[in-house]
Length: 450
Picture 1 (spheres, rainbow, N blue to C red):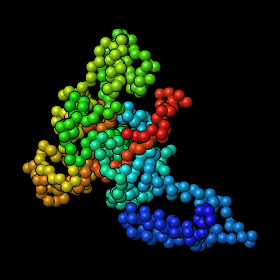
Picture 2: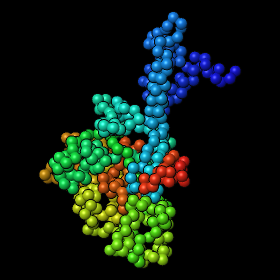
Picture 3: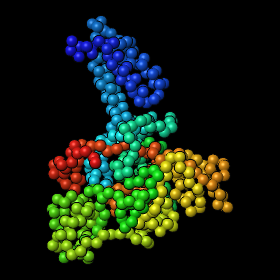
Picture 4: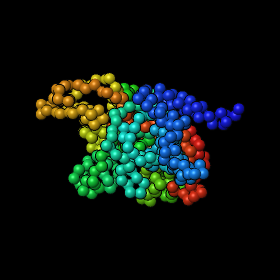
């Protein structure tokens, strides 16, 4: 007997899907969902509800059979795709150049949810196939009428140092309606809260799982001590591996003419980030990996190549007021830290000097009340204390395009409940600076993310 004929038996179908369903419940660890077995029985065996809805004509054919077939197909596709997006893989597009030249602007990725374990939906009432806004209207695509606590089921592993990671933007809990892609808190620091709301408001509050998605490299995990020296990352005193895609900007002086645009494009430079200054003459901030730096340095028309290192006092936008923890630290984007990354179960002493590092963790990410008395004492959840024990692991994320990346240097730690998944495969890629079909990056299609 062929499998197709065998599968037509309604009891075989029920046994097959019930077995898969129970395996899924074992993975979920929630036996309340056993109440879903009667639904499987109705779909595979009974079908009484379907008959009640469709009825029967005298000739034995169901009423509105064609329409019901389309509805069945749409509902089935919606359920299956939503199930895959929640528990296994989700499509994601690289929106900016913060990861050039590792992950390119215009790369379309599949993000593995099982790599770190899928998060169960915290905001379950949501339109399928969209994340947080409707495509045309831009209005919120979800309702917060029903909210669940954070829970992650078991995956294949945990976030490792130097992994590519997709996560929810930590500062995305508050969004300016007219500038949803920009950091509200940065706007407040640049101008004021009232001006930001008046110009770009009103404010929109988003739950944790409905914040915008970012992708960066995790340069330090919970318990690590991170430091950046002259643009290079050190973790626990050891230099980070110089991965091929990591790049900084350089001041490239030429003999008076721009470098050949075709040559720069063939080298893989993002032409949208390349600008030539006639007064230099040359490129004030050319983003180069180690390989591209070697090639540029050997060009006959190049006079000198100097790394751009931000030293204290920093340039305006990269000043300590805009760098986490937004206090007078003397840090810059290229000389930053040392900074310890909080770890679940670890306890720190709270002082006036370090409270800026942990205030958002205590109040926002771990949902406590925090008061600071005029005498410099701390009251958490109504109890005076001089220490705090972390409930979650935290991570420090940076873009490989180090001088064109808004990352943890600008908004701090990423909590474990913000982790979405790990990029696994580039299934398509286009270059916005070129016309179709030359815009297709054929060499990146079906490329594994490593």
